[in-house]
Length: 413
Image (cartoon, rainbow, N blue to C red; front, side, top):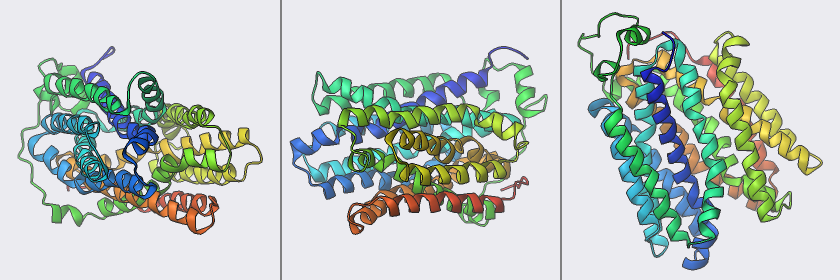
């Protein structure tokens, strides 16, 4: 059946939610200089506040997945959006280090419930052959968030103070919560506008599946070899991913000596490049690698590591930005769609919320570790970023090697 389909509408909504999530996640980093000046925060305190987000986000990933499996992704995502939007407002109301520490951790708890619910919806609403493309399109928003957030924050700061940034940024979250509650359904058969033709496309069956589904406990899920290995791979990948997002601006200013304004504009280029890469990742995976996601991921992560090495050793700033952009596209972002389709191919949709939450926990542990570890390496080497780049390269190569051990045969739990 040609034309716009109900699952396309769902994907658009999920795309907007991810975009809002990353805008809200990045805005704090942009506003930090103004927050630091007013509240008198030390650099170590700022680092602790940034890491507090990952404490809340990482610790509640599995809990968010359990909520999505038990109560459905619609309720879970609505709660998540309202939760983190409230604490976005509270961020603007804080008065010091301790209050910021608590609020950002609770903000991270709210955002942690959104990804498992999103992946569960894609696993339920899209047939297997469309899930790589759906994931790639959905997740390309996470490249645009870091690109647009600085522009929006700077525009607001021209007219208001840093607290107003968070008050304004909370509004889209509440709007998307309303959209989710009114227009998103946990399963295709619950949607009153679902056609029988599209239902058959999604399920391959003319009638809804009514068989009882076996409940899987957390201890049973942990026995799945693929689940544990995917979490380890996601940890290895997120070391360079969060290292890149956290330290790219500082690298451009400290090592490449970019002025602040130039850094702000230049730092967005790798993310726009990454967005373009994510749009074509599905086609490359299918046409060049014949749908073999493990081989595709190995290739992109190795290529990303190579460009990461070249960017640090580039002899001029133009080559540096070119290599950083290619490292961002290949090493950091093109992998998301194919990677997150692997759990959908190896695990039942019934446990996708809990499983994706567990996998994402591995990534968020890396998100907590990477900025601190890279900062330590830079400090002990006298300000050199060489060891930091080496660490990120090792993370990409390790993820590429480990992905070859994933078995893609469908399993029941």
